[in-house]
Length: 68
Length: 68
Image 1 (cartoon, rainbow over the protein chains, first blue to last red):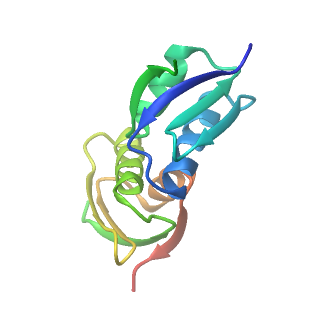
Image 2 (image 1 turned 180 degrees about the vertical axis):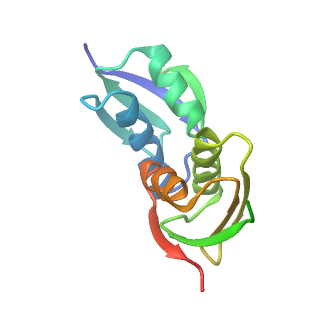
């Protein structure tokens, strides 16, 4: 599955990045995860969009859809 | 179950607080959760210590035991 970038709001520090990363890996241990904190972008491969949304929201952050 | 305070390191902003809170509530929806960010203290009622540790660590933060 190709990696897709999503906008996620509410991440403001390295702890947030870690929390989102761990939530995604809990949902899909083999997922590729790359997070650009200043841009609020989360790029994920190996987990579909509903799975990404659920993991992000369950972790307490706001999922704002695919990046343009 | 009485609320117990634990030391948790790695929380540095409100997003971290939300992430830890949500992880604890996912583990025990009825748990009481209070977090003192400057002190790094997480006070939880309704979830035992192993459950708190697991939720905190799974969220990407470091569980450092009961507060003195």
